[in-house]
Image (cartoon, rainbow, N blue to C red; front, side):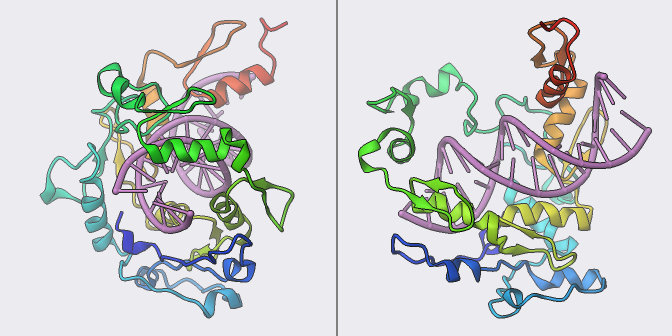
Length: 260
DNA sequence: CTGGGGAAGGGGCCC
DNA sequence: AGGGCCCCTTCCCCA
């Protein structure tokens, strides 16, 4: 994903958040995409008109293609042919466990992480991180009680130990990322990005088992489970297995016959 | 009721 | 320290 899609914002450096500034931050996607959608435009609230940022990247089909090609070069998941960049990408040649480059919370593979993970360990809880920054954030958020400070949200009762976490949370109230097609607002740019795919119909993640395509990588992962013989989620009461945790939860909540 | 797809929210990690 | 991305999870809807 091109970083130019995102509008860099400058928050107040003071400990007390500048709420008016936070509230006025509105992220716009490029207007070019909307040229393809002559839909009646929803009246723009004042927040949308005064601080509009139009970044260079357009979300038209051609540029989307460019975007996807460039973006996915970073990941092990890349189109089979660079000349055929409009072809949906294939995730299925990678297992759901190891296609994330070690960024997930899954247990790291012994070969790659044993030494890395032990490099920075929390003295409080012994949790290990591969980077000092990771350890620092962990300590700040969870274990370094001496340095904990409270940042309260003015919209709700939530409190956070860091200003960054509060800013992130406040975005869920202010919803600065607005879709110009339908007016729906989102807290983060990539939520808007995913939402825009619902308008464009872009589905860059394809399943090689059945040729279905998805707009969302996670939805492809969930779909891949339907092709798997082994269901990951098992009911402790009746041992029945499910492809999704949500299905297991639903099964348990609706009353597993073997429960109790 | 179950299984599956679509859409979205939030946390963790890397840069 | 903050921005950005990825992943996991959840909710809703439909067949």
